[in-house]
Image (cartoon, rainbow, N blue to C red; front, side):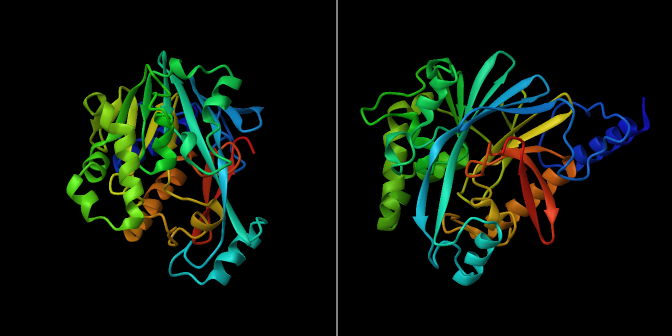
Length: 334
């Protein structure tokens, strides 16, 4: 065994002991000079390629992860987008990232995981209920030869509309007719509580109604998991509460490489990775969201994970590294 692999095995064992995530498997076979340490590092066995605009495919060990763009939404940038932070400071952060600051564009990206003879979908996109530039998931899946009927399981991070509305079209037809749907139990309990819906402010009623439109007809068939347990064999669930009460990511390990889909842990990368203590207005419990963000991004850096985010740029999959008091993101496929 070469010394770098021996060191990696020691580090992997220590990380597994410290991590809150029940990872499976061992350590990558690093060669001399291959130890991780910067965004220039690319783990062996992790390869990404762009298939077409909005679609990229990455191999992580023997698992294939395809990122499929569902579109994007552009909204005016105002003082409510990052509560408690002066608008001038938010605009400066966007300008520093070369994004412009008159408005903010938020992409939506869904992930297909092909692993152990199963095809999994991580979140379901907007369907026909989102912004004019969204709802392209089904067309983009078909463009790269993925039949929605071939999806075995859909794993949902949380119940905001841009993640669940794509499960069912406007006529009530299931978009992924052969799939079993898996959701976090605390998310289900919170949003499907009729008393809570009746007491909710008017601005939240639409979210409760969307949850019932999507899930009520299939409630008996929806599988609910406890965050921290496996959702499926070899698929870990990652508690990431704060954005919503049950917000949960998903991860796996293959050939020593760790992948984690973190959902809405961080919205706009230039704002909430660079400034992880800021909170987007969509975070329902900002303080818990901040703690989840710091904890999981620190674990991602320490463990050299391949990470993915629903609203992240490029292929929305890549690596994070520390940058000052925050983090930076480098997509595997720009």
